[in-house]
Length: 166
Image (tube, rainbow, N blue to C red; front, side, top):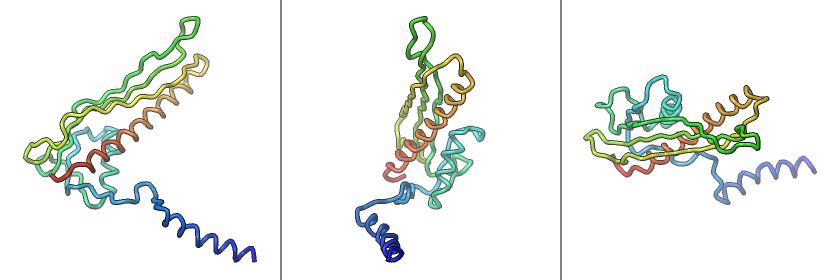
């Protein structure tokens, strides 16, 4: 009896989830509205590698190494990481930092027409600081920058999806 109820529950759960409109992240229509793209980032760029990996996952769009062969060109005008003091303790020592990850980019088509005008994306995260755990805080800072990089790639992809027709 219990086994039969568990089986019915296992079969009914996907049905109920699909009926309410539930959809796994990234399982929708992921096709970018163009066939090829040139990403203007160096080959050794972590941001470029992650962005290209997501674009290549879409079988519809190809990443090309020559901007003349691309239907769309992503120009990265600037990319920077910054660290600013957020707060001090009563002894005047640093207690918190704010980490910034800034990207300025534009998107053009093959005829040099701007599809997305120069745009800034700025992400920030706050991080506490502890003098007795410097190595741990450096590792935490690196993790936060990686997290911001992933967020940045997702924002870029959403903007690329919003391009009407190249």
